[in-house]
Image (cartoon, rainbow, N blue to C red; front, side, top):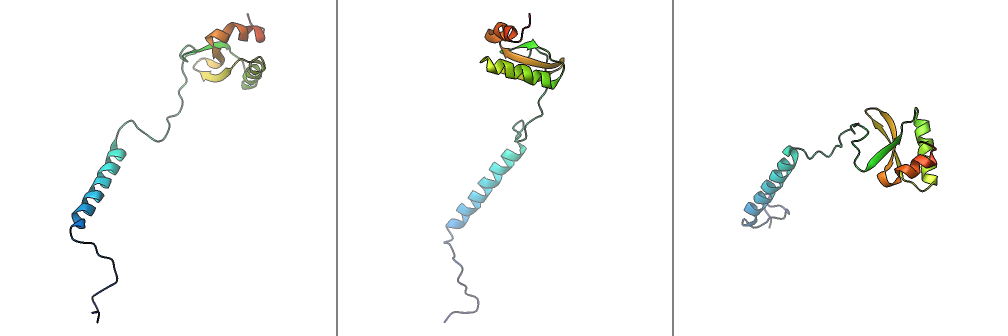
Length: 112
C-alpha cells in the first residue's frame, strides 16, 4: 500500500544530480558569455555616409539633384546592362558603378 508521501514523479538516480547541475552551470556560463561579449551585437548599426571615394570598387558617375533623378539614371543604366547603385554620401546623393563600367555609364547618361 502506498503511503501519503509517495508520488508518481519520476526520480533519477543520485548519480545524475551532479551531471544535471553541471549542465545547468554550463548553460548559464554560455548565456553569460554571449550576453557580455563585446562587439557582436545582433542589432545592426545604422549605415554611415562616407566620402564619394570611400566606396571601394564603386566609382561615382553623377550627382543628381533629387532622388527621382537618381532612380531614373539607375534605371537607364540597368536597361543598358550596367549595375548601378544609388547612395547618400557626405557630399550628397551619388549614382555609382564599377570602375570598368564608368565610361560606358557616362556615355549612356550623356555625361562628359
